[in-house]
Amino acid sequence: MEYTPIDTILSESEPGTTVQLRGWIYRTRGSSKLRFIVLRDSTGIIQVTAERDGTEGFEGAKKALIESSVIVEGEVAEDGRAPGGKEVRAKRFEVIQFADKYPITKDQSEEWLRDQRHLWIRSRHLTSMMKIRSTVMGAIHEFFRARGYYEFDPPIFTPNAAEGGSTLFEVKYYDDVVYLSQTWQLYAEAAIFALEKVYDVSPTFRAERSKTSRHLTEFWMAEMEAAWLSYIEVSEIAKEEIKHIIKRVLEENRAELELLEADIEELERAVEKEWPTITYTEALKILKEKEGMDVEWGKDLRTIEEDRLMNHFDTPIVVIQYPKEVMAFYKPVDEEAEAPGPVAKCFDMLAPSGYGELVGGSERDSDIDCLTSALEAEGEDPSSYEWYLDLRRYGSVQHSGYGVGVARLVSWICNMDNIKDAIPFPRTLTRYRP
Image 1 (cartoon, rainbow, N blue to C red):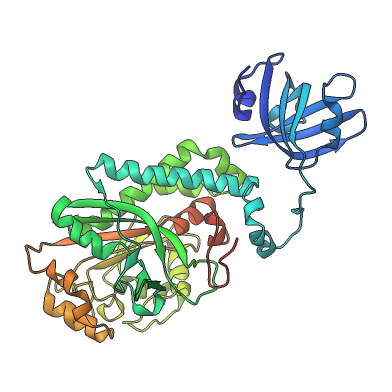
Image 2 (cartoon, helix red, strand yellow):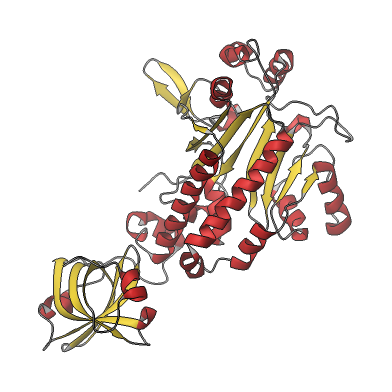
């Protein structure tokens, strides 16, 4: 007999059907004569009843603790009190492994649960997140491949900073020192002169000394880079990509969204509506007129300003033309922008409901002199970037790209309080195990 997934039993198996299923004990209660066991597999949970006088292996069912692995054969029956409205009345109950007493119980702290992540990952909460995260990853590949992008894999060990030297992780590399990648961008810029349109999803490392609920030191970034495109054009591609991802999650993971108590109406609204694009200068005007926040022009938007700005939008928005002074060395000045000072050809996408930046992108400067001056201003040695500057010496063209923080996106989609729960094993300033 084949094993039937739990979700198939709940959705398709008629009462009276004999099924065989396997999984782990999620909950168990009862007496010496009758046991009510909730069984879980990767697809869901279902109630199993075992009787002393009618179930082969009843003593095992009575003895087995939470997380014991089992195989059950029985008959499907309707029961409105059971999860999903059905149960399996066991004819045979086989325990594959009797689990020790499970250390995880109710009312334990989030940090303690993260210490037990290797076990807590079995929870329905994290299982739902991981299913949604898998859909997000698949949707990213689907989106770019359908548009003719090539997947391009960058190195993880790099000789240079790309997002500022203060957040570099230093690594001993034989007799030299290198760094863990902050972004694939510099290498993607090399690739677009061969492939024109590239994307990737890869791990990223930032040694930020932050303990907020929005930051990780190791996370996955979905990035794209394309020749011949402006920063405005790729910002529109970013809108299309995030909408595509949300649509796929709504199609494939509604049950998981409901279990996580995600704001499904907000996600549906995000798919249906147009997303505004505003300038940094317009953002400051909104903050001043509607929030009473007088932010000095030229300062980057902090978390508090982003959150207050998003009080006035019910979908993600794109903010363009941030002050050049607070931007990375590779972002060129937009000479055509109307602003109180020099602004960069760049954008951020902000999510509603206090989730902050989802996407960051820009056009890339093609002027060697400007790049050299910007590197020197950041305290970098331009000679370390000769290979990158070479890209401007041999047929440089307008090109742009952006990166999506996968965990930040999953946090927003799942309505999570902490980004640490949007990745299977979080790495932070104070956490590098399990």
